[in-house]
Length: 72
Image (cartoon, rainbow, N blue to C red):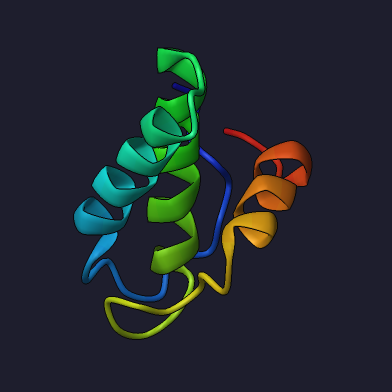
């Protein structure tokens, strides 16, 4: 998976967010690669703020981020 190009503030909770995003993608019926990409997006968003729950508001925000955010 290509990484999203974000300014990292704090990595607390990024792994948990990645896992939660991946599982939510599987539960939503996404193909494996898309579920993994959702997980990477969630982990990336959490890295942009302070604390383990920073950066993510809702699933729509995550999906918009996946479509529009630059990649490395």
